[in-house]
Image (cartoon, rainbow, N blue to C red; front, side, top):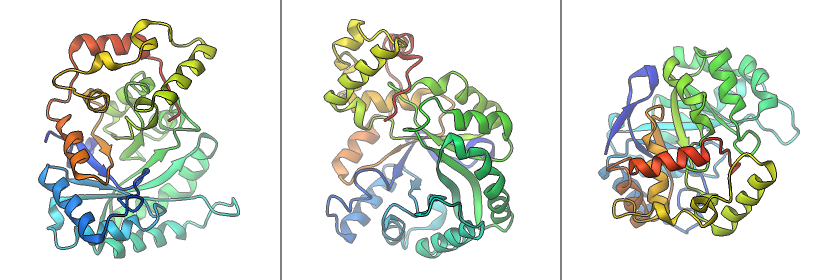
Length: 314
């Protein structure tokens, strides 16, 4: 496993980290038992993963992950979780909601500190208000030692061109320690400004779901090309796109998934790439892609030339 650092914090993080959200919901959707979840996490640690990401509103993922990590030396892994600002009535919650969420997460993980506490899924129209309201409380929790780093995740479906991370890095570069966004073969837009700005300011970028949905499902890929054709931003009739991406498959990248992870990890502005699965074999296959986190130079050059402006919403 390769390791990078969480921005200016200098905290080492595995290039591949494990996500407890997504379709599998930390194995719940697949029917994993508690012992099976513990085996999954144990294997992730064996493979060199040292960061586990979840959220308070991922069902009971925090509790299940806490149980799976129970008894494992605390200094061998990092916990990243999220607080959601969304409420049924649409009103923003009191700032005490952040404190309550952090305290609940601490209990669920039976720990004294959350390594990364994030605001979950910020939309462009809410960014400034959420930052003004809740960042001071998060900073206080950080000063109290209950949280080591603070950050947020973007809402990719509402913000494919990363206007929220861009605002954060341009207007409040000293407020956030981490930003979770999507960067990959079909989502390269962040490489234009976001990733260089993050490197400049020492903000760690957590790369979420770079191979989910569109890259791995032919009908969604075809629909994406049609959407891009309508916008005229991407040359979708280029044979390297029109005929699919199987040309990326090599001995070192035996699947499109492996190629996707390699591309997602290659940029030096990425601290860690989050992968999530409830299947140990799939986890091992995914982690194998990070052993040499780089596509052939000619493949990378073609992808950047054709898809440098890409911003797929999923």
